[in-house]
Image (cartoon, rainbow, N blue to C red; front, side, top):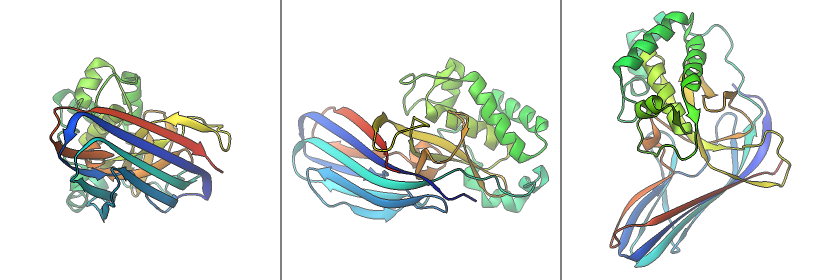
Length: 287
């Protein structure tokens, strides 16, 4: 359940790949278009590719709009630019009532229903030490909703946000042991704990305006961002990195089990040994 519209936000996300030699062909997928949900409305969304071509579109298994495109002409540069304008909710109001009990979440039918958001994956694995932590946190939580706050708080107490300290290939276990990471690590480590407690939980990717008092029309440099949603009677979003409610500064693009389900751009190419990648995100409050 959400309240009325909060902000109108424009996002411009440009990714460039430059190669030392000709690329003969490349095959790509882009997940860069914000979703329209019960609380968020995508007013406009465009994706442009250079060399110029027209991508095909489809909705993937997780409900994300995907632009797929193949480049069959020789090129040394590939630039993908996604521009969107989105109305966001003021805040996600907590669901009414007490929510499900632990016995409810342990029900076989419910676990089967949410199996994909309870099972471990390569990027959200099981770990003996963290399994112990999950059991301890569950014992402290009167309800699954309480467990969500405990899990995200536990992660924030043990991870320091440090831009560039990890990569998309870093395991949340390694980030936890190192004591630092980025939003992806905060999210995936929280998912390890929640799933270990038996709480269905999923990964959300999108954008986050870094300025709570942003002036209208003032563009700021940003990044892709990630947060969580836990099922506690309904899907409850929360941002473990920033320790704030998901609301008017968050723009939802994709949901899945982990980062690899929501990767903004991925693909393969042939003909050049390596590439240099640049990414630029500009976020502007328009209303």
